[in-house]
Length: 567
Ligand code: GLY
Image (cartoon, rainbow, N blue to C red; front, side, top):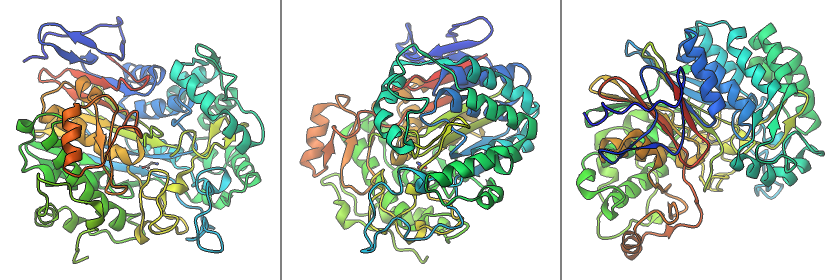
């Protein structure tokens, strides 16, 4: 009942709320934006507004997805993209669920050892910078696949406001200007010249992207094939090959987004629907949640020593499994049933004791009968018809490979680094891979993206996700627990301080100055390697929760420029 009386109106027709959220005075609960029936929460207000406008014109969540995703490519080039890929999980108003994989693929000419020197050592930066780092992009195929199956509004109508945004420009925020400055020298080095983005852009400048407006106008005219077979494809392949890429026209022409069965599991009275491989998100989230379910987290308290211990130990074991067993399901056999079975997971955590940390060196993957990183971006949408989607999309690193196709107006991903270049050698997220995630032609690299929808007692309850590389899974986990176990609002849940553990390296990352010193001291005394320096922020969660009265509450993470917009 505590939610009923608060409706925050920041506008007349569109309700917009940039974080930080408003304070609900009478109950001291901090509620995010509340709207009646539809909402988009994304990394930029402009993108959330465009998605919402599409729904106001009668479009549904999938129409809004198309427009929001492309708007992020315009005004959030850090991770919004045409040159990357992503995953979408959906739940229709009638309860049907599904998932879309538009992850990048290795080019046909890719080889297992393509990033190793003659001694078999990984060559620094080869999988992260420039042409060889680029995987075959999937984003345009993804939004067209979603639109073909569920969309109702014509593409020209969806892209009109996006093209206008690209032509008229968007106003640069403080954090964005800082990021442009940060990448200036590396982007100039990789591209061999200055590009549209760099330290010449200041806060409050307006950035227009006419090249991207032209690319999108051609997509309106010729459809999906413009990107994969048309003039855009020709220009893209020529550009990539000039920069050392092995991607060919055949690679682009062969790309397909794939509909997948999402991972579905229960936790108390919740049903969680999350992304299946080639993302590790759903399986790893399910493993962690099933391991921790028997523990009385609520009574231990939020971010208490005991809660942190239980989560960390479950994460340690789940990430060890992730790194060994998971990969592209079209290439490797994943023992999903065993990995998610109660018996297996009970056994996995059976050696945990509150007395002492389990050293990661003593943990390996289970026996089967079979850092700060905010690259990537997530948006959540609920429409006025009751459909919900969770979409996480990425270039991998910030601005991906740093290669910017200036004729086309977008960055290219460095998703090839999400493969395991060499077994046992960590990638940019410190994740150690194994054979299941080794490089092969046309294979999809393992992801941690965890777009997730949660039902409570069979009804839509929440849609959420986050950027953050390997910290994505643990950020989604903590946000769900914050609401379910610790009775937080959606906004409080996304804002709450987070910690992260991923088996190796054997450290627990904490957001600095956010946790009680006594808790950190007692964790250290028990053998946990506490680190507050490496992750100034962990994740940037954007979610929507359905309130008991049917209205929607947005949680737009305070850590970014994120904004909820709806009606
Ligand atoms: N590129 C980050 C991920 O897919 O996990």
